[in-house]
Length: 283
Image 1: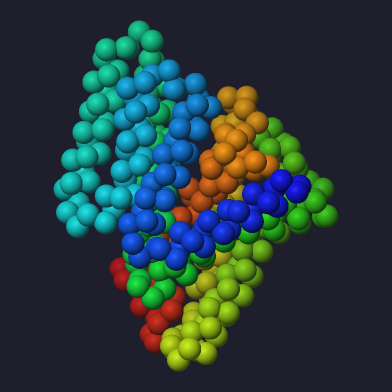
Image 2: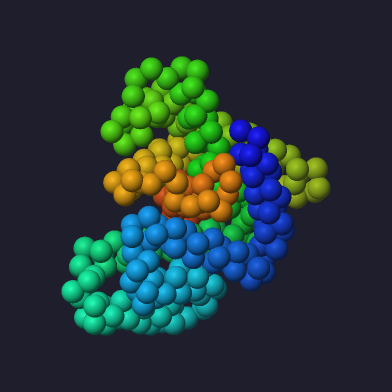
């Protein structure tokens, strides 16, 4: 427990520093590094690192995607993605006797999921010069604090197993607690965020109904992401995806819920302005 607390404290400090530079490429490169490490961890768990060319291509794609999101021409991104996929399949022809197609699909699918989902965090920051950091914090809080709410609720009130074959310790009561905890955290954070800016002379409206609904949905997506990661670990017989975060495992262990929450937040906040003089919904 002490190790987990120390690691969490270090992680919080690192996150604050990275967010401080969120309007620079430092933020992109930080997300890029995390994305690449996550891809490496999951390829290691899936026993795919032996396919070196494919692994290198996957890592390059994971590292480059969060940086390319700021490139104005989408053509560059499309060409880069197509080139990476071409290299995967070209290499597959050469080692088809060792690399089965299902393994190649695992490498492709997991790399795309991690890279594109983590890139959504950068997109959240770029949605608004004023509120971008808030959006990122909400996305991370929706994934991590909701999981904490589920843990404590399940510890004290959990009786019925949620998915015993996938994650024996998770309970229905814990899942409900996690889903309900997230909107509460969202509302409290939005309230404090609004008061902070009002104190400094910056006024805007906060649309709490939308925040509550987003919080509930983030709680659900977070549970799905966590269960999918647990299922993958169980199928490949690994306890943790990595050891880079003592007491927590790897980055993949910490960001599994984020992979589902971040895209949802990016899509929703691209259509709904939570902090404005007027609620704006674009179709």
